[in-house]
Length: 134
Image (cartoon, rainbow, N blue to C red):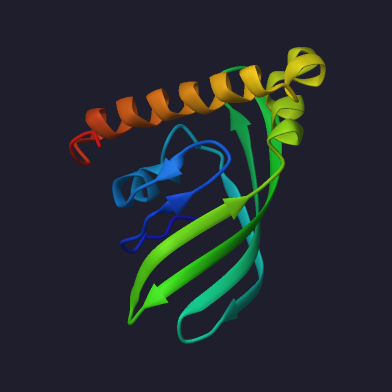
């Protein structure tokens, strides 16, 4: 399932999100990405959704099922802010296997995960010509 992302900015446990990040985020290495979206709620200036992403993490070849609660702020027809909340330790246990189980809870390892994800996303954005680095 692929969808064009409207302009937005926000944050997630892995990386902060800018518009170009959001556009690239669903494309980066996720050739087998499956998305399930539910509990979509929208008001004039805000919204939320529950979504689940299942994919193979390219770094280890391990299957990941990530459960995410998203919240949005709108202005007119534009996204102003998007926040994805999920359990980074649960992600690390699935994506990294035994190393994630033993160390994925620790702040230094979570910082390393975020940093590596940001570098990978920036490299993908440069390769795809999706915009200059922030």
